[in-house]
Image (cartoon, rainbow, N blue to C red; front, side, top):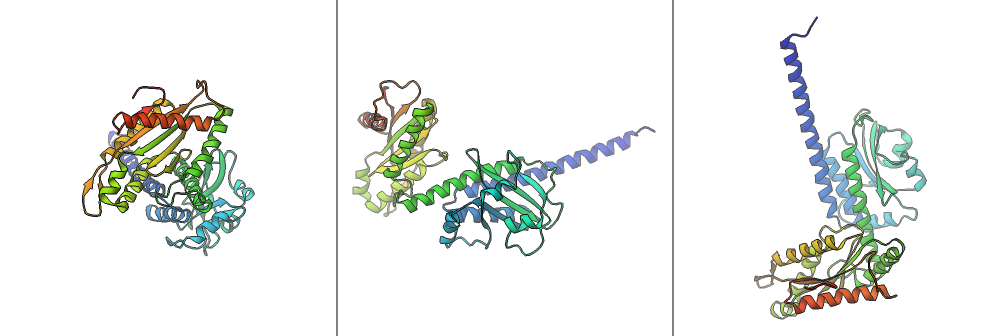
Length: 366
């Protein structure tokens, strides 16, 4: 017996309604993941990042009864980082130190998000303080530079909440962002511990920059590629201090450093080089890309407005000197670090001499 036009129309209508419902559900899920990502990008400590992940998950998704972050932590140094901070509030057992062997045993090779039933062994490992039985779980591997460093874990008491047949695109994207953010906050906290952070701006200091420069030059000698170095100087900064006072000058330094650090990759380095001068190191960045980044930063600072203690609003500008190493670089002396910085400094000097608020690339005209 054939299908009548009315039946066919009814089935089509049902299919369209189901499709619309699925689209709305996907939009809600994507919105939840996006909110979590935006919040964790701004985290200043490992404890804050873990708290934001957990709170964001609870807020965005229903039927998530428990969530944790597990990281390889053989000497418990990361656990101590979390415990030493007093804010924000973080439930006990939310950060889980884990051995590499236990972590690798949770995932196939190569690691992929795992949606599955939750057994008692995994619950005791990843959700150690949750008192009730958990029925299903979603484990997201945290991978950094090709290495498994941890997992972000969600669980529900409902045994079918996490279905192995469900697509994991959203989970993989969130896990990639979370791994980068964890690496960033760990490096930042270790900078503080090692005395490699500038106290005023809370970015790396010159000592840390020189260490990272040596590492990147060693890598460049071995593999080639491109390496950009930029020196950025705030124009007429002495006039800011003289006119508005040193407290206002300090706020200008802090705000400019925040702008220079906006959207940097995990491999990039921003440091306060001295006084009102900053330095950026951008590995695997072409001259065209470096020029675009430098111009964007210069324009961003020029558009910004700064407030004095007296309530005045004023603007500042920066001058930038850019130098580059790539496979074509010739006549580079043995001490490449000094040469690269001299080239960037000479370009910065020409930017200052050329009227300020300019970018000059070493070896070119202004």
